[in-house]
Length: 103
Picture (tube, rainbow, N blue to C red):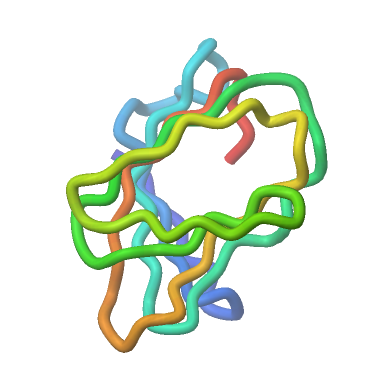
């Protein structure tokens, strides 16, 4: 597996399938430190699925905000601006699959 740390965002990513950026799906585990967040992803082609393994995260989808807790999942059309953030004191981990690859 390959991993990358985005210290300024408080997020680390671990690719579950090597070179998956070249495939149709890109499965990762994203670990969000307290206050960690992704950049805002603008509308793009595709779909994304996430499953929270630990903690909870907020999914910002357009002008809506959803709390996704451990054991819960999300499935979104990537055609809307979206972002994930961890506003909790503890770390959160999410299995995240993008189609097509975007990480």
